[in-house]
Structures are given as C-alpha cells and as structure tokens.
Image 1 (cartoon, one colour):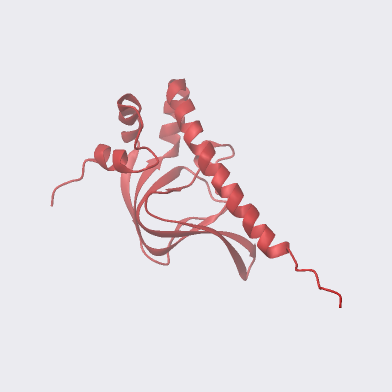
Image 2 (cartoon, one colour):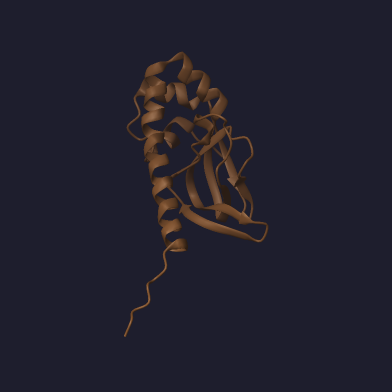
Length: 159
C-alpha cells in the first residue's frame, strides 16, 4: 500500500484548496491522517481543543449538551468541511461534541503546532484567521437557527 502525499490531500480539500505553496508547506508539517468509527466522539464539549479536522469521508454531528439526558444537534459536517475552530481561540476548549454518525476519515491538524506557526509568521496567521472566521460564522448561524427552532412558538389564531 502506497502512502498518501498529505500535501496533495490537503490541497484537494475545499477549505485549503487555494492556499499558497509557502503556507501549504507550513501547514503540512502539522498534519496527520485520522479515523473515527461510527458512534465515537471526535471532540467533546469542554475538553481541550488542540486540533482541527479536514473531513474527507463520513459525517460528524455537532451537538450541544442541554442536560444529562438531552443533546441538541446543531449541525452535521461532512466531506469537504472543517470540524473545529476552538484550537484557534483561548481558552482552547471545545464548544460542542462531535459525534461520528458515519465512519470518518480526516486530516487532523495540530492546533498547538499551528498556533506557534501563526505566531512566527503573521501572514500565515492572518490566512488561518480569515479562513476560520468563516467557519465560526457558519457555526454561529447554525446555532442561531437551532435556537429559533427550539424557542419560537407559533401564536394561536383567535377565531
């Protein structure tokens, strides 16, 4: 079995497809292949966030814990999408659970490694922040839509 060229795999992922060659070389040094079996957690709310994932195959449900017996699904991410932005912002803790609802293959990028590279190369740091701000915006919008679904009641019509 031939080993995959992570640079090429990462370049093909939509989130990083147009990343400059220089920044790609910086990024690939922090990358590794990972696998999550269906029913396993890739991330857990409240735990330390030191990675993000480029989803290649499978599906991950982002959930928020309401109480011991109830979780709310915020969004499901799949191939071509990104799982995780919490590695980028202090206190580096996950804001959601990430449950593999179908077997997942992904590229994991080490958050501590990337934070150090961002600190040493501000152009690279700006590039990462720009890309992840769009991910954060989509997560906030998905959360807002879930809250509207949960807390909006249909007014009764008077006859």
